Length: 337
Image 1 (cartoon, rainbow, N blue to C red):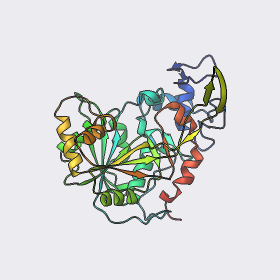
Image 2 (cartoon, rainbow, N blue to C red; image 1 turned 120 degrees about the horizontal axis):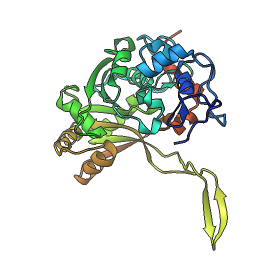
Image 3 (cartoon, helix red, strand yellow; image 1 turned 180 degrees about the vertical axis):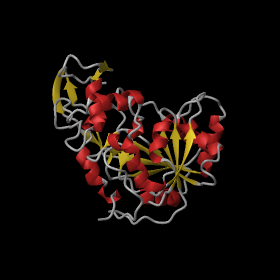
Image 4 (cartoon, rainbow, N blue to C red; image 1 turned 90 degrees about the vertical axis):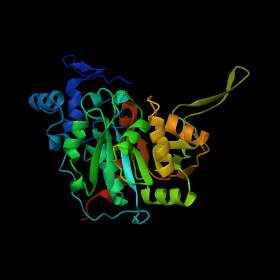
């Protein structure tokens, strides 16, 4: 992980980042974003006072209106671009339990899905919930673990966001995203659901959930992965011939089908997830469930997205996120004028 330099030698440090500057990231508003992809180094906005810093930074995020900007949007009638949301029987599970080790030191202060994003500095998870509600997926289970209380304090029952939220705590003896889903299924948190939208909590996107579910049903499959074939390598590529570089291309694009971290799981797929959880070992959706489903002759569909999405799984990817673009791409989730 890239370390963040400090302009003063007196700042306390944590994981390579000064504590004083770290806290200014979330609590300064308005003004430029703390991470700006056009800058060479971290240049945060004005610092908060030391008393507020200590209260929020070390006790925890208690005063959420200070941490996340203005009051969260209230439930309202939504308009937006793309396909008109349709009435459909679907529920959602959002993975929110990870410790976010690759996002440290930010996740020493925030649950990773609660990291402020966008120019309005709202939690990442709020955008996810808003997106699901926009597409009439209102029954949402948040699969929590690390810093679960931070999430529950902010979202409560979800009514102020137009959602019906319930919470499912990850089992400590078993890890993995597939087991987190299994825990919710076994606890009857999802009820009778044959169409489950699974959303990774470190992904921000304008995914057309309505179209995704329609695609899943039309394919008659056990699970459908959301893919993108606009993959760009994060490094330059050299072609070498006879010990010499013959050509070089900086960050080339390839038509490779990469997963965006979201999927739909049908009833038979959910049954497999529950069976796998009885093996009493770590099970992940991508590394364990999908390969097992294919191995047992399950049917896995593909849904290609052409929209906006960004994986905020590391400090580097968070730094690269264009905060203004978030609000631009997700403007359709805002309240009506």
